[in-house]
Each structure stands twice: as C-alpha cells, then as structure tokens.
Image: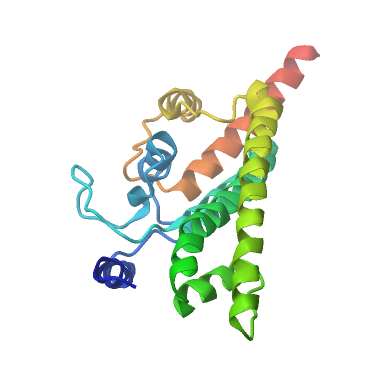
Length: 219
C-alpha cells in the first residue's frame, strides 16, 4: 500500500468517527432527506452546522442512507415506493460490489493486501488460498465475476427503469408535495424543522383522506 493509500485510509477512519449521521426518520429533517435524493450527495445526512459549503469527507455513509430510505418506504401507506426502493437497494449493493472489485483486483494482482481481501470477503466473496497459484486463480475468478457483475448491473438498471418509470417514483417534487400537504393540513410545513417521521404521518393521513374523498364522490 503506497503513502497516498495509507493517508486516504487514515482520513476515512478519522472522518467516520468525526462526522455523525442522522440515524432515524425521527431526527432527520425533510430538507436533508430530500436533498440527498435531489443531489445524490450523501453528505446531507451528516449532522453539520451548515450545508452552504460541504466538507470533503472521505467516509461515504451508504448503509446509513439505505436504512433511512428503507424505513421511509416501509412507513408509507402506498407501497409502490417501497417495492421500487427494494429494487434500487439491490442494484446499489451490486454497484458497491462492482466498485470494490474493480479497484481491488489491480491492487491484489500487484501485491497481497489483507485489508482489501477482508473487505472482499465481507461482501460475500470467497477468498481462501494456501499458495501463490491458488491466490492468482482466485483473483482471475473475481475478475470474471466482476465482468459478469457489470453486465448484470446494466441489465437490472434497464429493467428497473422500464418497470417503474410509469409510476413516477424516480423523481419526487418535494415542493409540490409540500404544497398539497399544506393545503390538506391548513398550515405551513417547515421542511427544515419538520422530521421525516412527522412528514410520513402527514403523508399517510393525506392518503387516507384523499381515498375517503374519492369514495364519497362515487356515492
């Protein structure tokens, strides 16, 4: 491992301890949550004093964000977003595996690296060897799996886009949603101070109200 890699690893571990994330819907604001969706920047789930200028953070809170998304989609009365999110999460994990293998394989070809090998094992790949030839065979096998993984990601991305594009769950116009919910509640909703937990409660209440209104209209 070269000096730059060691430095990056130290920064990664330090940032992981230093920067805390919102861990539940009870504490993360509507603005923070949907800002991640809008920008794909996971730094918005860190507890920062200001978000006008985001720090260069080496640690990426992928698992924390996936949990928040999962909790949100599970909490909604409308389960279409939940089913979509399951598919997106599966794709996300495939992409993480692909990213790790893509950058790990060239390094392991050059030199044995226990830390990288352990990372690969944690992702569910077998990496047991007793001699140099077995070590090289495993790397070649991982290389083949990586190529196959790339094709699988491409196929699954197209499948998700085709299946869910008509449901319009890819993009959420949060300001339009807020406007509807404010009319329903008869009051302003501050997206900077309202938690996602409260937001989901309002959303579900609106869904039930709209459903009742629709049923009454049919009578």
